[in-house]
Amino acid sequence: MGAFYSHLVFRPPVPASYTHEDFPITWIETKQNSLFPCTFIQQTNAHFTLLFSHGNGEDLGNAVSYLNHLCSVLKVNALAYDYTGYGLATGKPSEEACYANVEAAYLHLVNERKIPPERIIVFGRSLGSAPSIHIAWLKPVRGLILVSPLSSCIRVVRPRLHVTLPFDMFVNIHKISLVRCPVLIVHGCRDQVVPFSNGLDLYKRCRLAVDPLWISDGGHNNLELYHREEMMERYQRFLEYIEKRPLGADQDEQGRSPWKRLWRRKKKKQAIKNEDSHTVVDCSVDTISTERRKLGRPELFTSEEQRSSRRYFGMRRRKNSRTI
Image (cartoon, rainbow, N blue to C red; front, side, top):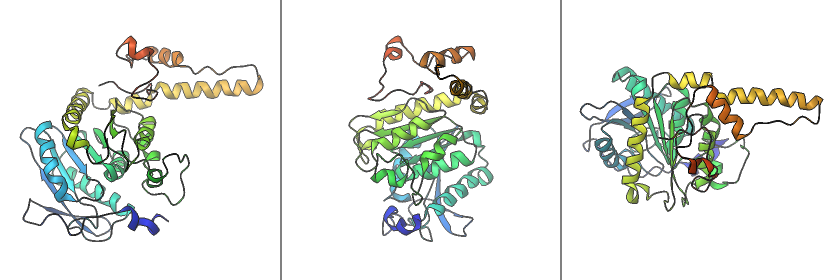
C-alpha cells in the first residue's frame, strides 16, 4: 500500500544536478531491468570501500563533492549510485527499486571490481539508511554507518508511534536487529526532518552497536557543515575499530551471545513463576555483568564514572554498546 504515497516520500531533484561529462559514470542494470548510474572514487592503498547511499532530495551530483572529501580524509574507496528515478537513472522511484539498486551496486563491487565483502563498509544518509540497512541485513559486510537514519516513513511523521502500520515504507526498525556487523549511528538531537527518536530507536535495537554520535545542536542538513571534523574523527575511530576486529568475530559473538542466555534464563524463571506466584524473575544489570565476565568479555563502561551514570547523552545507555 506504500505505493499510493510514494510520490510523497521520494523527492528527486529536477533536473539532474550533473551530466555525463562531470565525472566518470558506470551504468548498472537492476533485476527490475532499469538502469542507474554510479561512480567509483579510488584512493591509493585504500583498505576499505564505502558503498554510499545518498539522502532524499539529492542525487549523485550533489553527493560526489562530499564523498571526495570523505574518501580523502578516511583513505577509503567509495562507490556512490543513484536510485531509480533520480539523476540520470531511468524508471520511477519506489521502495522495491531502492532495494534493487543497492543489491545491484553491491554485486558490482564484489563481482566486477573484485572487492571482498570483508572490505565493504555500507554508508547511508537519511533516506539512504533504508537501502544501507537492507544490504547489511541481506549480504555480508564489514560495517554499517548511518547518518540521520529513519526507523520508518510513518515514524518520521509520527515519532511516538510504537506499532508498524501495514502501509508503512522502509521499516528499518525491524531489519536493524538482524544486521550482524558493527553499526555506528550519527544523529542530530535537533533534527526537524527525521526526528532524533528515529536514530535512538534504531540504536536500541542494534545487536552490535558501537557508541553513537549524538550531536546536541545538530539538525538534518547542517551536520556536515558545522560538525564535519567531529564526524570524520568518529568515522576514523570506527574504521580502526573494525579493522582490528577479527574476521568472523561478529558471527561468533552472535552465536554465543549472553543476551540469548539471559533470554532463556528469563523464560525458564517465567515458567517457574507461573507455577509459583512468589518467584521473582531476576534479570538485572548485575546479572548481565556476571554473564559477560563468565564469557571473558571486557566491561562495557570505560570508567567508574560512566558505570555509575545511568544516562548517556540524555538517554539510558545500552549495555551491549561497544566503546570505540
